[in-house]
Length: 534
Image (tube, rainbow, N blue to C red; front, side):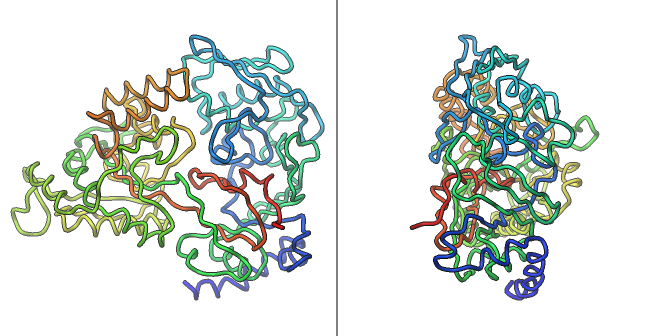
C-alpha cells in the first residue's frame, strides 16, 4: 500500500497545482497565518454525477450545501426547523401545512416564498428520480409563507422528506440548474470544473448562522491521490478508506465518524423457479431455507470482520438502522457461535453425508454464490472473510465480483453484499415490505412476512413520530417474529462503517453526527460550525 502512495504523490501534487492556484498559498501555511485563513480545501469523496439539483437527488445523503430544507437535524439527529417555523398535520394525516420564514432570499437575491417550496416538491414528485415523493398528491402555496401538502395516504415518513429536499427557485430552475445551482443555503457555487474541482463561497444572503470559512474548494481525486495530496499538505480535510486510516499524516489528525452506513448480505428468500417481469431468475433453494440464514447469522463473527476488514474502524451491524431512533436493540444476537450454528443446521436436516465438508439436504448442497461489486475492495474483503468463517459450518459460499449491471440480473437468485443506511425509516420499508419485492434494488430477495408488513404499514400511517418508531421496532422483532436475524433472518447484516477523515490540526469541525450511506459529503452537514480552534 505504501508503494502505491509514493507512486501517486507526485501526480497528486502536480494535479492540485494545476486545478487550484489557491493551494500554493493556502493549506501549506502553518502557525498564526493558517489560523487566519478563511478558505479550506477538502477531498471528501467524489462529485455527484447528476450535479446539484435536489429535485433529482442531490443532498439526500447529507447536507445539500447550496440549498436549504424546510426542516433539518441537529447534531443529536433531532428534527428541528430550518426554513419552516412550524407545521401541523390534519387529523386524517393527509394534509400537512408548513409555515416558512419571511426573511429568506436565494443566493441571487430573490425572495424565497411558499411558491418556490410548492414548485420544488411538485417538480421532484414528477421527476421520476430517486427522490421518492410518490405519496404526494400536490403541493400548493396557500399564501406567501404557507405551503400545503396533500398526500394520497397518511405517511409518517413524509416528515423525513421535509428534512432532506433542498428548495429551488421556481423562476430560475431549468435544464442547466444542476450545473449552476441557486439556493438559500450557506454557500453558493463559484466554479465547477468537472472531474477536477468545485469552488464555493459563503452566500451573502444566507439567513442562518454565517459560516466562518468564506471559500471552500472540493477536489475530486482518487483515494490514493487524495491521501498523497494530504501528505503533501495540500488539503485540510480528506476522507480515506480504512486501509489508509492506520497511516499517519504530519499536521493532521484522524477523525473516525460513526455512521449507519452498513454492509450486509441479502439472501434470496424464496425457492427457485420464478422470474421477475424482465425475465431474470428469482429464488434460491439453499438460501430460502431459514436454517441456512440463521446459521450464517449466528456463525459469523462480526467483531472479527470489523477488526480484519475495517482495521477496527466500525461496529458490528444487526439491522439496517442500528442506533437510529427507530432501532430495536433486541435485534442484537450472539454471534461467532460455530457450535450453535452447526446445531441449527443439524436440527434442520443439513448433514455432511459424503464427507466433502459441505452439508447436504435432500440431495441439495449447502452451497451458493455471494456477489459483490468488483470495484469495492471493502465488500470483497467482507465477502471472502465471511466465506472463510462459514466454511467450518459446512456451508460453501462462492464469492464472485461483478459489475452493477450484472448484479442487477443476478440479485433475485443470488446472495448479494449490499450497502445501505439512511436517516429515514422508509428505507427499512423499501428493503423488507412485500409490496417492494423486486422493485429496483429494493427487497431483491423477495422477502415477505404479513406480520412485518402490518407493523410497517401501521408505522407509515402513524401521525406521531414516537408512535411510528415503536412500530418500526416491532417490525424488526415483536417477540414472535420480525425482519431481523432474531426473526426471519432475510439478511445477515455485517458491519457499520466508520467514515474516516484526516483533519488539519487546529481545525474544529464541531460535533459530527452519525452519518448516512457514503454518498454526498455528509461531514459538511454542520459546515457553519467549522472554524480554527483558539
